[in-house]
Amino acid sequence: MTDYLETEVRSYRFSRSKAVIPGLLFLGLGASLLLGATIGPYPLAPHKVVSLMAARIVGVIDPSPEATVLFNIRLPRVTAAALVGAALAGAGAAYQTIFRNPLVSPDILGVSADAGLGAALGILWSLPLIIIQLMGFVGGLMTVSLVVLVATMVRGRDDVLVMVLTGLALGALAGAGIAAVKVLADPERQLPAITFWLLGSLAGAKTNDVLLAGLPWLVGLSLLVLLRWRIGVMAMGEDEARALGIETKQLRVIVILSSTLITASAVSISGIIGWVGLMVPHMARLLVGARFDRLLPASVMLGAMFLILVDTAARSLASVEVPLGILTALLGAPVFIWLLSWGRPQWA
Image (cartoon, rainbow, N blue to C red; front, side, top):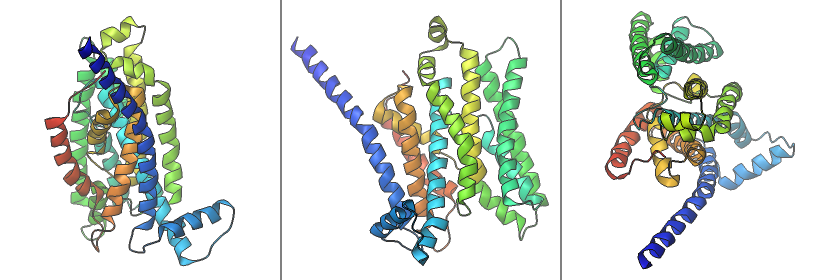
């Protein structure tokens, strides 16, 4: 009886600690946003950032250099970092849950590679930046649409396996296409731009970019939120989900398309940034557990916080900006190995 009571008390304390974590993540996100707005080649004091934002909210326009740096350069970039990090982490959490695989990430179906190919072609053809971003966005959507179409046409085989293998094949084709574009590109002007874009960067993020990418991000994330309970049931297995009346194939297609919409919107403004969608959901799962209704918001906030801090470091560590993909790989690989070594896999 005593052992039972001790177990219940420990479980109650653990549940209470988990209930506090979302609030701490929200505070951490706010602190990271403020930190990202203050640190940079032109540093701003935190109280100055707060006063400038308060003045802008009430309609007062400040013509000072600090206001120009904050509203024209710093805030759009910090907001873009938050959006991209939240998108990749949220999509990664959805993919890992729906596929019941801890090694699944948003680019498992070839989204990032084909979005990179679309953007590389836009740079090769010297198109405007908005068209380059649009080509990257459309490339990612077309790839997953083709993956879903192939999985629908192939009969008698596991749908998940067909999707993953098709995504890997299309990703390999996109990689070959990117290599061909690099060979054809101007080595002095176009090739550095393609390489830098493929490594991931938010150096050119503007307010319009955030607004354009924010709409598909909001649509895709809203669908995941509305379907969070069904997605959570899918983590128990397809047989259990079907027994509860869930159309598993239809749900999987909707989740994949929603996650792809989120991922493509992020890649279109930042380029290819690896490890966020793979690593952050594991960290969130250790904090709040495997229930998808808790995992999704925790992953979104943790991903936004993580990429804001990484982007702040990328533009502050050296005189030359470090591509985000390099930093996320340097941070992600050791952390992921630690998670594999010490973390306990949980899915339901």
